[in-house]
Amino acid sequence: MNRAYPVSAEDPAGDCPVPIDTLSQLYRAEPEALSDQLGGIPEATRARLAIYLYGRSHTRRLGVQIAATCEGSSLRRVAGFVGNALYDLSRQNPATWADAAPSNGARRGVSLAGSDTATRRATA
Image (cartoon, rainbow, N blue to C red):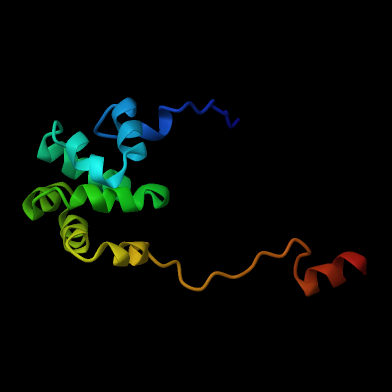
């Protein structure tokens, strides 16, 4: 039997390297104030946070911003090749960060009507 568990606000942050309150403050911070808020967070933690945020589509840009405050060696230590790529991306023009999302290829539209063949079988 499958069991459904309630989802709380803390579940998605289970592996987040900072407390949920800190994450919330960083998420809401203006870009100019972000570096001040990151000042009290050790670089190793910032590197883990950058990788954590970059791995989620809705926080990817913040992850790149935080990666920009880290040394390449810190990001590589945390995530190897991905950390290296994130370091390189964070040193580029911020206008290119929007293009940082991994491509899923060409997405096909979803049809609720089903395929033509399935429709013909169902009516036969």
